[in-house]
Image (cartoon, rainbow, N blue to C red):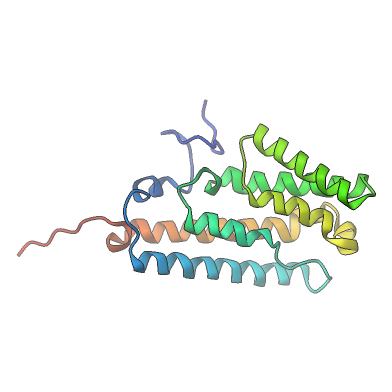
Length: 193
């Protein structure tokens, strides 16, 4: 069955990481590692700028802290299942939803944290979108304080969704550059004299 968000690769699955299946087995050059590191820094900087513009200085974090862990997975471990689109978006959005619900329904913070993690793991595993930083997103939704409670499900729209869109877009652009640059992709070039 065709699904663009499948966590299992197939010939008909639309994923952003298909070129990395070929690249993962090749040794990483210094220039490739440098490019990946710069792209991760650029992605995080763009996330911060865009969400500050969207959310302003309302006390809500302009960047969801778990985006740092997602950047490590997307840029440094691009061939892992957690680096695919469905785990990235599904893991964060489902976990944030569970965290928001737990914070609203359960008055005791420690119990709300435990329920948020339990629910996030249950949903991510059940829907095959395990993205470890999603657990931190669930905790952020519970621990965010009064500003987070006031924002409620708006947290999904801003800052979380823009964070995810920007990281996935910069990852996609990086993969296109690596795929099209023979010295970065590990492709052998032939010179004829």
